[in-house]
Image (cartoon, rainbow, N blue to C red):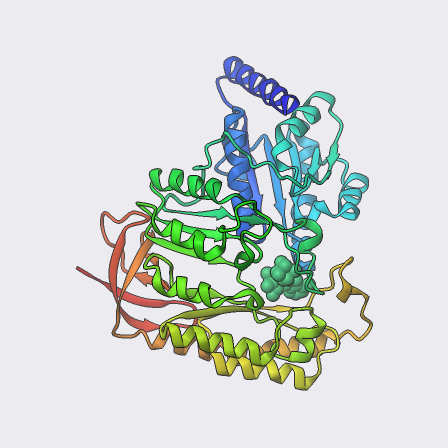
Length: 460
Ligand code: 5AD
Ligand code: SF4
């Protein structure tokens, strides 16, 4: 810890010196890929960099330090990152003082860290997901030695990037808040448990304190983040720390108007959680409930621990308790061994549940996962044909969900001058109004429905 502080001190002094001699502070630019976890990590690293005397660059071209916070959940995400990093080679050749870093889920895989070390020697620092708080040390060492710093040591305690302004964030009115890290579910296709480590919950008092700080700084909406938020509290000393209890406590915080959470694993969605979502006024009646596949056989192969019937029954329980609830989902097509009948089982669930939103993915082989060992892979042509059939089935359902809103007046939290979100997460477009800022609550009467958003007029 002392060592960490020394690096912080050295780098701060270094940047202050640059400022005193040149009149400008070094600028940083963080490019974030993937999920909300990564976005929140980037916000925290931004806060850390600002504390070290850097200022945010408005564009990558102006930056003295470019950091890629990467994702590896699918191969396409990795390809994108490599494409973007390679494009910096000539830039770096022209400007050798430019510092380039790569961190996050992709580099946490040692094979990728080695690949960068060997093939992309112009990268200055490479670190992982759980040692991100050591960024000042890595940066200082890279600046001092001029040699690349590659360190993906896993730190199981994951010290929070504490004593920094956690209020640094991308949107003034909303923030993600990590309530737990890692994942112990080991779904057979998924790389997350290998790059984000074991599941561990943050103490409830820490989470609540962070949300109170955010609320005092103007945050009205929080998104509680974890790979499996329903399991929150497992392993904490305080046994009363469960997810429903956390929701009840967050609901009490003044200034917070909307509470969201993701992701829920269907296997852990308890009756007490359904009751908490229903009873707590600030908790949005919108649940992201990844289905992955509708086939009980494929679900077993995927190690998802629920059947088609159990998923449908859970959706029904939620819809019965809260008739207006919005259910969104993730679906993978083309998992190894998926037959036409398995795929049709997925379509059946899609038709039966009536989702309000869905992310659809073609299965992507991730080295190191059990699914990657399978030889019964599905030909790409079949996968893309099923993908198209799935979206053709889904899109009218999403549109129907939005069409049902026509004529209704809904509460919309403004995000941009002409856009905002309903409590159920519906994206709402409206004509520009004067004096609106992010976080304002307005009433919008819905006049038109599209597949991914609705259009409406502001009601005074
Ligand atoms: N291939 C395709 N999709 C995947 N996901 C996770 N791993 C893979 C993979 N190997 C999807 C799941 C998950 C979402 C975040 O990404 O649907 O819920
Ligand atoms: Fe991956 Fe499954 Fe964990 Fe989600 S629950 S992060 S899909 S292993």
